Image (cartoon, rainbow over all chains, first blue to last red; front, side, top):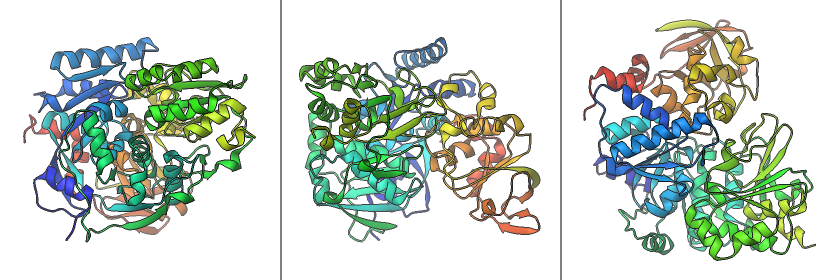
Length: 417
Length: 164
């Protein structure tokens, strides 16, 4: 019987010829990413082991991004623990380089790999056809010490994309539409696979954005067919693919969805659930206090260009704080070179160093009681961005920037009217 | 612990990890320090009312969101002996098992119970509530072994050293 991309990657990692959904396999992992959200906990557990050892230190990548730079003595202590341990054991370590998933995409991930990340949005790596999945620190520790873990082979939902997104509609609108359609647990325990002619119209930034958010539908991983666009991205970043898997024609999918990209409209996810999506037009006029353009989902140069194009020659609304946070140092420097940072600052935006920022509700930019944020971040859970009685709306870079200018939720096409 | 009885607390759908433990409390030193703030965005009084041996009964997609492992650790630290939900988000599921917190999936119980009711659970068999029986599926043995050892790290320790 044919296999899906997810099944092929697990089979290769398990050293078997075929697998099927529901099987549990012991797999060898290609890469292990961890960030400052939980690494200190992993280290505490590691130090309690009787015979601690790292199976293969060359597979570990540790990235500071959740509280960068440190905002308290407490986080400084956990950072120091992580930094010292990385140095002592020779672990590849990044600080100031950006949000972990963007740093991984720029520097490490390649097609066909099986990767554990101690962060839920590790599914982003499917943009180059890698099986990335989020785990907690105990699973991470076990994989770090043994080089292996167990995986339940997931069923796969297939999304056949056709057509192309209309002008003013973005990958963010597409994935929010899909999450709205299948629900916040619509892909629970499953893989979400994307393919079809429509995929070829989406650039790497779009693809990362789509895969990154699949965990908000509960997905174990997201995977895209590897094509010229993905291979060129790897080549530009100096990497070769490990395997370029496609699903077999007779592969079994739990469900197949056909999506015409041309039907997608600008979308907003309302508080407090990512699947609480509506046409962005339905939110026009909603009061906001802060806008955020950044995160592993939408902090790439392509997103900053969209925002800069809209705000050039205009000003951030005087009653709104507009935070712009490039997803990586590479993105930041590219934005500087293109004059984009200048454009945002000229407009009155607050440009910050690459980090997770208000997307995870710690560090800089948290919002107060009753305040409203419109964000390109990953989640809008109750209290996610600060006070428990605050409100987060999720939208594309265009909708967020347009709203920052207008001082209330609006869409880019309404801005010029 | 083949059979046990406990008082239940009832929660809704999509109880996410930011509800279970908001980001602002993650910098506290231990899960015991964090536990009083569990579920605080939704029900600030709840953590103080939960007693050792109580059970949580929730709707679908319990534990969705972040991979923060403090979420199941805190639920365990509060003394909750089991969470029953219509479904669990997968990262939370793994994290709970790895920390020795028992999870049971059942899609009917949640809509039949009221907060404060008592239920009796027979592992791998059924839940009893007001004379009604709700069958439950059994967990694979490898997961049962992890829970019984008190979590994955303790299961590893039991082997004395980590080996292939």
